[in-house]
Image (cartoon, rainbow, N blue to C red; front, side, top):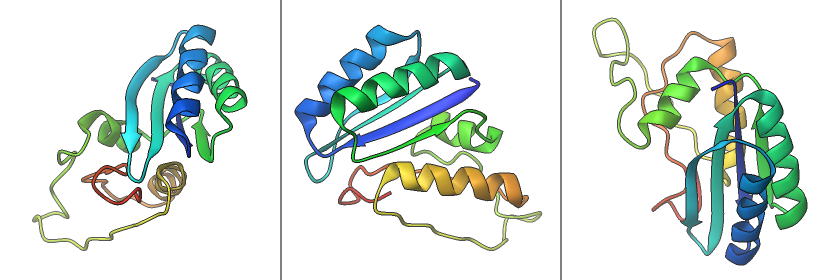
Length: 140
């Protein structure tokens, strides 16, 4: 996958409409999609840079996303964490498994992905788990 896009909508109905338009607009893979707390809608897609950019624009225009992020070249560690879902993508926290741990909490999932991509590209760290809004009151 060359690109990722994550959109968050305040309205479930607008989110469903936007994702319908996203999938009809360009050939992308829908990696995650559904309701999140409290009554919002989240959609994560991936694919080629051109396809994801086109699909992102179509979804944002149709659904009026409350937050979104388009990552044309996401860090491989972020891609691994997205693929792993909420299971541990890399449970080793250092050379002997006892390194430091940083926990980031954001008000929205797109904000978290934006931050994590920048951190992973700037600092040699491992992203063990990525949680996007479920059972977190909408936080990531």
